[in-house]
Length: 371
Ligand SMILES: Cc1ncc(COP(=O)(O)O)c(C=O)c1O
Image (cartoon, helix red, strand yellow):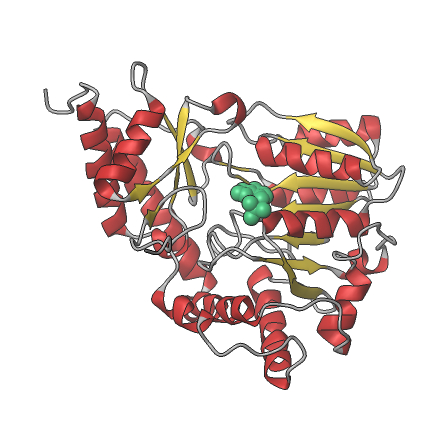
């Protein structure tokens, strides 16, 4: 008797997304130690690939933190925020709130730019906030996974830069799925995860620090996430922690797949399949929470119709179709389903399957599309 999973779930929730067989095979490569020459070659290659995928400027330091997306958040915050730093944090959902909490834990005086859940931040509101409050650091979530909203980070980062503040951007649900250009948008620090649009297992957090952020780093409280110690490992081959070669191999292969497809083509695929999903769900009478212009292509916040029991429908998808989707978080619990079309999961055949599964789940609760 084993407890190892023996079904391939169709992962269409907020993450993890489907892992391709190529990435699974890469993960089964022989274990090498964290300072083996074979590992160091991989790390150099992963660094170069990440710099390209983030579109970082020369002089940036791109690498991967050992840990999930939250460890990327903590690495960005703990190295750029010190006691008394003024941090303006845009909070338009659950993960913006996490970012604000993180800044507070590292001693910042946090001012929140609260945005209604389900709407995108208005860059003019951020400008007014910074005029009134000032900030040393402005932190924001690009793809708010709790609401399915894409914040206009290009414009928001420009506003922050006008005020001379450093920018921290959470790209956990955007890197590799929707347009993001760290260099051209003037972002100082940006982190993501491996298990969403990059199509790997969870466990590493890609991150990039631009030249200004590298220069203005603070001596943080965290040992594990200390930027200078991590540079010592990644650049100067000095032991810091025992990095997992299995996860590095998986990230190497995920990034190879991203680059073979090409970022522009990958973004276009995510947009196409998102639009197909929206049209398919509309045939069932299902609509999305955010306004069309604010929608993410990677995470779809689908409104639960009145009279439909959210968890029962989600369970039906899992039990009858082997499909995982996500529930709403915080104030959106019970009100939305979260459907991720990310990485290998952004595919027309999966949209069709999901449409059929939703039709069946609604019918089970007495809502027939073709009455
Ligand atoms: C926008 C965003 N930020 C941060 C996180 C935290 O990532 P993790 O769960 O990998 O630690 C998530 C997770 O879904 C997220 O969606």
